[in-house]
Length: 344
View 1 (cartoon, rainbow, N blue to C red):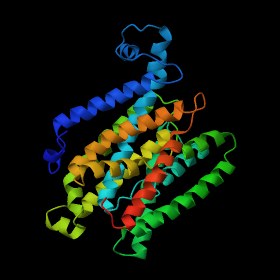
View 2 (view 1 turned 90 degrees about the horizontal axis):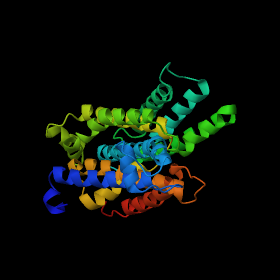
View 3 (view 1 turned 30 degrees about the vertical axis):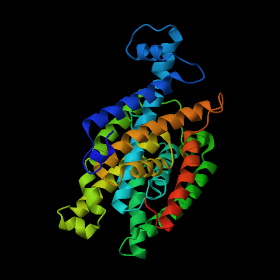
View 4 (view 1 turned 180 degrees about the vertical axis):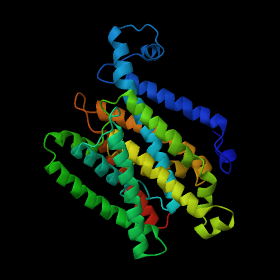
């Protein structure tokens, strides 16, 4: 990739091909690796309906590992793009669904739908997904309202602080739900820790559709988010519809986070880690940052999920534990650099 030529431009087709090839390669490695090692040749043959060396390989690839890896890639891409867009909108590298409390709100909505038995006939995932989307957007609106009440300028440090407090409050509500969950205790715990085990193609389709609609809306906002970097007033002067852009980004990000939580639970810090790392390499240009974060997030979460199911095999860790461990370290580094006025 020619970083100097691309630094001030857009995401090039040749670079997109490189990232796509990298993502497919990592996905193939993740599908082939596990408690039962499967040769890459058999992985490709199983996917394309060709003969494999063992009959069980096709079943493992198609019905166990492939939907799980696809969900990991789609969720990683979605969460990373959401984080990059929210950081650009709020002009703060600490902004993310997990630090703003949006992910916790979405988890609370999904947990409530499970406890109350909210569902849609013929669509098992529709109830938790709808509640997660509703609560994620409601959480974001509540946090912004409280921040506006403290400071009409909506200072980003106030938004982050209220987001952290809100996350603690929601965690206590989730603990209360767990106390009265009864036979649904295991399912509620799943939402709070984040896991990608047992995924199906139905969930792959749900994530792909949400990413196409809401992720597409975020990926095309690169020019507007670049303008926000110089301030909302200046952005308005260069022709950016500030209010419409803010509403579009917030609705799209909260809806996408809600869908991700409804599928895999609270997988924290992906939207914090990846955009920050990509920004260090690529610079702050969102026309490049957003698509690179998309692919880097997919690769990261696929590898994190691979680590979750292989590091202590046969014991499987929740993938949220892996991302939280990495994210906590990165969060501290970002916070220290921000306080010192270092370059982000």
